Length: 247
Image (cartoon, rainbow, N blue to C red; front, side, top):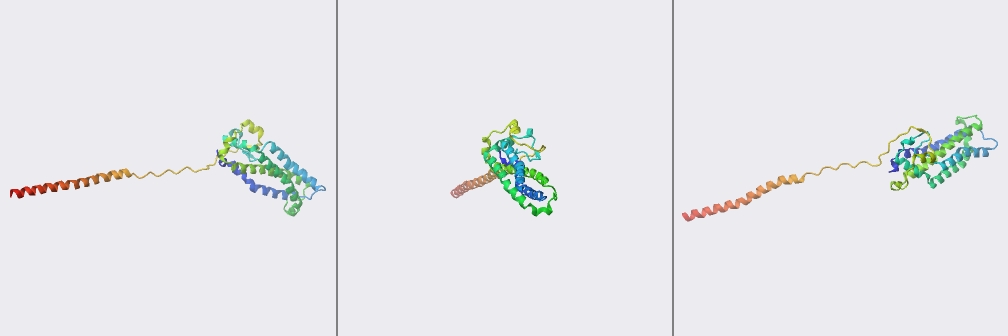
């Protein structure tokens, strides 16, 4: 089993471009209204709802490797390879990296809210209440947290040696439902990728023995003619001697 043949892992790398766009969306959303009397408390509450809460859930139940948030592979249609990949998601290193990303969102969100006023003319929520801006920002923070975990686990699984994947037994369907966060409509069915090309058929070797067989009879006939010529010459010489004696 090669994890690089799973197309969903490659699709999750789209987060490399999606997360910066979502951060830009945060700038436009927060630019719709001025901060309230307690901007620090507002930012902390929005981060706790949008990033800390989802991070705690994802620590307990990591994001399913076969889920793209809005669409997923049906659970009953999971292959053995996909269940084996799901068994590798409970690594402590991946959980710590996910928690570190959620924690890093707090200072980043703080900085974005401080400088969001520069994008006020471009905000789609211009002149809206501050509560509305923070309410829209929370789902964006949750999506960023989800995609951050899927990004780091996709990179980790794609870099694994295929020979070491058979060491972990695959999850059962019951374990998958209870231990993984599977979100999205069960409509996604993709074929595995081909990781190696089939070997080209070898060209047939030339039939050298047949050619040698055609040459050997010719050589034998020439040798036979050469061997016969000395006998004929000896007979002619004996006939010449007899004629001289008779004469």
